[in-house]
Image (cartoon, rainbow, N blue to C red; front, top):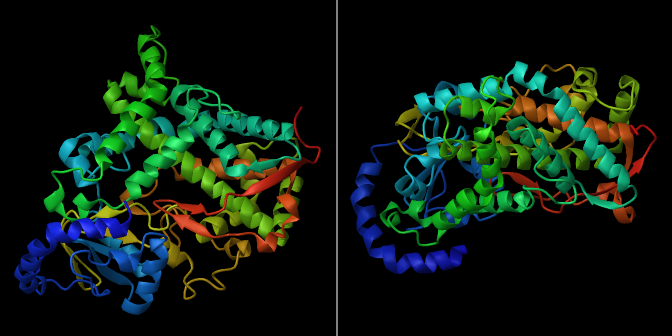
Length: 499
């Protein structure tokens, strides 16, 4: 449903109600000093001023007019956006606890009051259940020990990708599709000790990329019930039905047999081999495991593959940086395979990675937070239940923070000590605070390992002799930020690949 149709449906339903509602609330709104922002339109608020595409750009332009912290209305909902390091620090550090909720659709809360609280990223609040899940993730999947124990799996999966690309030498490759399979099988082995799909699209996970993409697009669409809670008893757009069908019948069906097979195994005396084994040993039911798996694959495959695509695109476009990265890889890697232990000897490549996620953060607005209680931020009132965003895209391109901010310049990170661990509020590609991306360490290892392996084994060309400087770098955002035109690459062997 487009915004025009939505507006047409809303007017007869809500005009009279909100006419009286605004009169009643006008006096009470003066009691709270909200951050400044553009004047909202009747009924719909600021929806049309934000627009449907690339809201991070709209918010950036608004911050230039109204300041580092702005407020808008989406229907009845209040939206707060911070666009400077100071605003980010207030939201993600000073008021991290008060603003640590997740803004889960009211349709899901009403119809499935516990389902959305069975995972880590989208749990409504940071309660004891959330802390328990976070500790399980940290201990059994993302701890230093757990990551080190599975390093050989990640290395093997990346080399399988390299060998597959070697069979496609000289062909036009959509690189995002290939690295998506690699990321999915890395997670498949970490969670289920198995590959889910091969590079020809066969396997129990075939079609998962399109399914995850559809789910993200549906979840990212604004819902009438969230903008106007008076409508929350009706799923007017069929949103809930679509989301639950994908979650329970499409994604859940991929691994249900594998999970059941694990339950039927009689090796109870052996230690858990993977993440699902650990969950089963802790007494998790299939209904509890399913949302964790969906979260793991939705968050860990899409963002990894789109970041690698941006990384490769920037190196292709910036040939001087590409040559420096290639020289470093060829000098430091003394065999025909890259191991994770080699990555510490590739500081320039890591600088290129840091610069890529500065310009192209996977989540330009991070994942929306929700105010669990009313609080005061930078002298303004943030009412309870407001949706709160941090515009890291704006921060990462702020000329007050970054010299020549639109230029791809990895050298800015050499010797700077600036990291993506969430402590520098002028650079937050993975967020910060208790809601920081939990998979940052694994993702950075996979991305660097993948790109280093492609540099070591191949020369890269753009099809049709396109000038790299003329490459389309337009972006498009829903929750994550995508390259609008998928990147096509031709890989030519340079003699290093393992036979």
